[in-house]
Image (tube, one colour):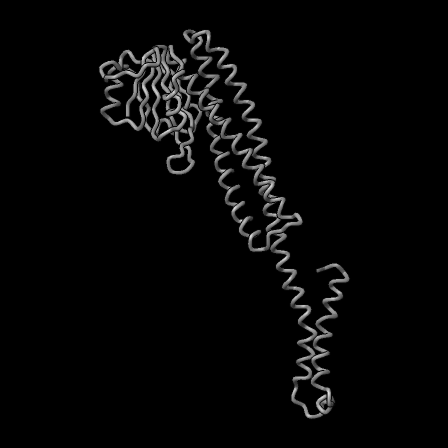
Length: 317
């Protein structure tokens, strides 16, 4: 899909006006769309393989006074995953190339206060929207981690919900923490891509970058630094909650093993008594007692209760 905009942020109506466009947005472009844009602008359209390169030298290229940039973006089309987006910035216009839907781009296009002016204005506006989206998502994840923290540590309180409920909660919590950790890593990857772009844009466009964009670039750099610090805080909190959840799972497993151990220890003496009186020897004196059967039961009960009392006295149960 191809969408073009003029310098006053108005959407162009026809493909014949591509040469006058300040911003051309390509989403999973066809070969015909690539040919039309190349013919109208004279710029190379990066392919999917080119924007997916992970080396910094491949993601940040200056060629003939034109910047070819790429950075990871997060798409939620089929679950959170990272896809690469390409930016081609010249003094006349900006080309963006995407190979997956992006909520940030769609929201930026739909904005009525979208930046007007040069392609550099549009690029800084897009990067600002990406950083804002990352910050909003970080805040949401922080609130979600706070909810998980309260839920996990409430398991050790007085009003316990029962072993089955707690086991299910712990399993669900592990899955939720894994999903949050995956999303945080995607945000970090996208943030690092943005951090790499900003110095290169400012350095290589000094001759023609509008003066009003320099403060905005400084603000963007400061925002990325603060988000990076907050990302470290979230990562530490995530690791703490993961360790706490695994600790509660270990405690639950130890409780099960403790119950099984106590049951096996308590069961040994009565089994021994029952085994002794279960032998078929005629000279066992208790067989001739009038209360021999009751005596045997009393011995079994006593040998069961005495170990339980000892465990209780030692506060093992």
